[in-house]
Length: 271
Image (cartoon, rainbow, N blue to C red; front, side):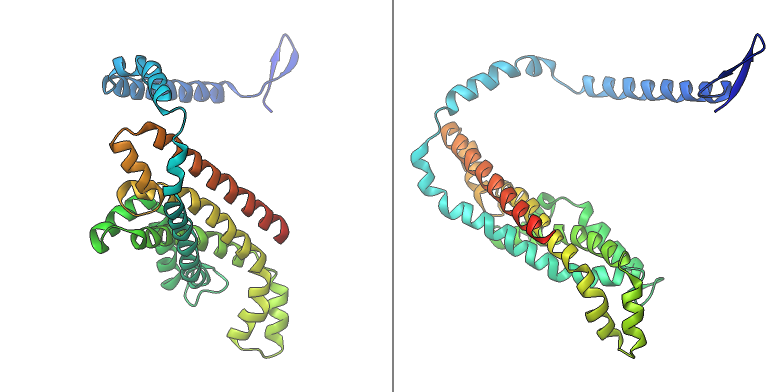
């Protein structure tokens, strides 16, 4: 802490004069950037619709209540497709993420200068693009339907799972690996008996956590034609069938809550 003297008395200060000036300059720059961004957003916003939003929201609420409960008989297959998209996409992503994670981890990669950067590139590229964008691209390539949704979820999840898994691999206890290596075990035996047992709890937790996330993401893939309950939601929105929309949203909420409960129970059992 800097010290200054006033009337011969030492006074403790949090910052020196130069540090305080620099601190205030940063604040001024931040306020100026915020004001500029707000001005740009304000110029591009039709404020009449913003002020009228409460009335529109109230009108939609009136039209959507009560939900059309008899429509629930038509939501069985769509919600089942949504669960399948999330589950199959998670399984495929885990199968692909495991080798990528081992290639990306510093202590297991065959080459830190060639293979590891390529593995990290795969992790970053798959995580950087949202599942909806992947779904749009895949629908243009393989056509609309559940399969496009499964592949979109799988690609989106590879980077997430591989990143968490390779970090878990890098944090293992090296003494166990050294002990198995000292017995003359091969590289694959060291991996199977020294590394895999240590990362299995992390792997199980990652799998359940990602499946929980994919349940949420798969509910909206139907909005772009990738199957699932989102397809029913899009169709109902297009014809302004608000009671059906309300029921679909309630079903999605129930599915998300149940998946959250299941994942929490599984993670609790693993930990």
